[in-house]
Amino acid sequence: MFYICSMLSYTEENYLKALLKLSFQNEDKPEAGTNEMAAYLGVKPATATDMLKKLKEKELVTYKKYGKILLTETGKQNGIAILRKHRLWETFLYEKLDFSWDEVHEVAEQLEHIQSAKLVDKLEEFLNFPEFDPHGDPIPKANGEIPSIDKVLLSELKEDELCKVVAVKDTSTVFLQYLEKLSITIGTAIKVLERIDFDGSLSIQIADEEPRNVSMKFAESLFVKR
Amino acid sequence: MFYICSMLSYTEENYLKALLKLSFQNEDKPEAGTNEMAAYLGVKPATATDMLKKLKEKELVTYKKYGKILLTETGKQNGIAILRKHRLWETFLYEKLDFSWDEVHEVAEQLEHIQSAKLVDKLEEFLNFPEFDPHGDPIPKANGEIPSIDKVLLSELKEDELCKVVAVKDTSTVFLQYLEKLSITIGTAIKVLERIDFDGSLSIQIADEEPRNVSMKFAESLFVKR
DNA sequence: TATATTTGTTAGACTAATCTAACTTTTATA
DNA sequence: TATAAAAGTTAGATTAGTCTAACAAATATA
Ligand SMILES: [Mn+2]
Ligand SMILES: [Mn+2]
Ligand SMILES: [Mn+2]
Ligand SMILES: [Mn+2]
Image 1: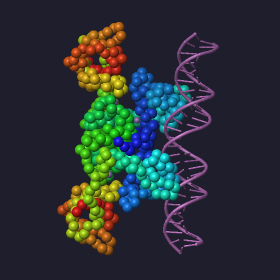
Image 2: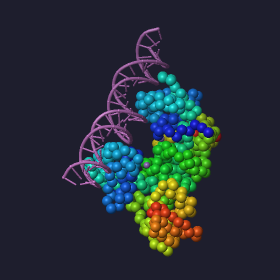
Image 3: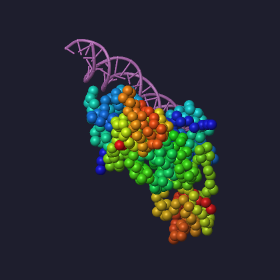
Image 4: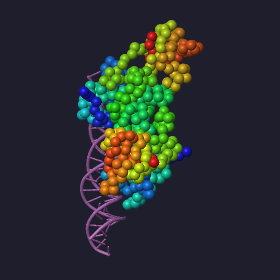
């Protein structure tokens, strides 16, 4: 019934997805600024301004000169469609082709632009309608709905609390590989043994292993469920 | 050890693949002309000339003004790499995602440009090292080798000869859908009952069905093995 | 061989996406 | 509130890929 334009360029799709992700990040106000957007995409602000005019022309964003950027409903739905493809492809690479969770993103970044409605839906079916991608992020449904899940940052837990890892907030290769080194993956049980007030670091027990200390930055990069 | 550049644009890749396919078509001399190439790619000759200069600059083709075009070894290997990806993806879509053989080409045309050596090799493994794509065309190996197979056109058979379909020469949707209607697919047994000299058409028996007449054009579009 | 046809090239223009450098508006701060 | 800093825009240039129209070379044909 709606929304999804297929006449978007590779580049326009990247801008829409970026704006969508920025809107998740700025929870309170789902707006973005030109510089913020440019930085996120690795282009110069001048470039972003130009693209903005084009997206506005196509009624995918609302904005006026020197103002904030907001996705229209159409823009949002198109962004969600890209995100859906991205996360389904990541899941495919991880589940079926033995990619590790720090390798999937780069390739999915390309695959998300393949145009074929049938492909996406068949892929989803082939993967058995997964709800979450390898990083624990929710995979939007064909109708645009995004499953949600209870989650808090590891850093919010109190001493003696038990939890399970449900997602990573930071998906950088360096963090993901570090997690792998610590044998932490989605589903791993963690117990908070002690909170060190001095620097915000935590002493935790990962599964049945020896206690170890992790930094505040670390604890703020991992989502868990109590 | 060799050959595969990764710094080729989507467009350059399409030109290399086109030149490779034209070189198969013109078996005797694997050369192509500017107009031929332009027609194949659906661009104007002027456009093809420009691209040719660029490909020559990169030493992917040899050619001089008003002369014929020939892929260099590097150009050929790069073309083969694209063809390999194309046919592996077609096989994936057909085998794993239930696409029909007239639907796979269009999507593979996009997927063939995804850059990731690991992806191609893992995909091949996931598909169990297939030798042929859904149209019966050989899938190049990682080392660039292209499996070959004995095949003749259905039109070359004599009366009373028996054969099996091994590949389609024409991969157009209209032809593939017609084959489907006739219950002909790769592996189907066919017996030539009669050759009609008048117009080159054939009376054939498909599997155990009633005899039927097919045109010369049809018989020249289907590869079979005696 | 002279001419016509086919084949291929050049020149000039356009669009999408990008950049740098200069400028303007908004916001923060002294 | 005046000024400095940050945020955002504009102008002009570049590159890749495409086109049309005019031209040139090669080939076919009368
Ligand atoms: Mn992308
Ligand atoms: Mn992800
Ligand atoms: Mn292609
Ligand atoms: Mn094929």
